[in-house]
Length: 292
Image (cartoon, rainbow, N blue to C red):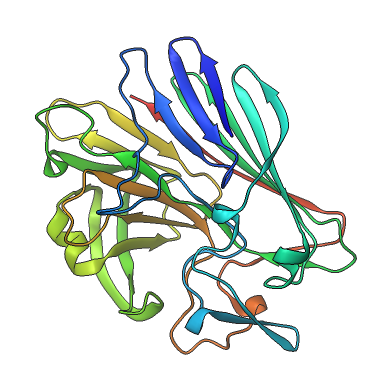
């Protein structure tokens, strides 16, 4: 089912499948969310839960058992229910079930709140632990933004501009999608990273951890304007577009967690930035996307 949202001249749409926001348009009809293409990436804006990235051999140890789970978890392929709705806001909800417990042995309530704000939208993850044991999880976003945004423009006409001057090394994924020990110096005392497909063809994903910045802007090099993402409390942020596809989008991805580390223990509790939530507890994390 598709839920339509509206605030002023801006509109959005949210699907119950995956609980994801799949459209955001301004008053001129400009679409900011990537609409998916099987030739490059059929996704749009998946919610990543209860893992972010690839598990080692698709498996993770929890307690004394080993569980299998797909890349980025099962939420993105699950049907959510509508837990609340108004003209400019919808709350999508996913609750543990026999199907989820077979791959992830925790009781949970996972809500995704999509709220239209001034010239943008805010997505908030709300995770509640209704069980009697600690709940372990990772969570993140994978928001595909059209790039370029205007006719006659190219991907290379854009750049990423961070809120602060950064001196940062990108964490590099291995050939099988795990996190290797290799790093590349991507931000050398600058706030700007120019975009080109050749970089993503070579690196696949640009991943930063512990930036000073709490936000980043996808901005035109010359004419200005673009899209700003405020990622706040997320400790990691990644940028991705399909390799060797020349595709007109870039994913802005705030993460609380990441893919398996090469040589890791395989225990879920040892994963970087895993969140441990006590019984009865709730964790909220949000990101906001606004049009400049």
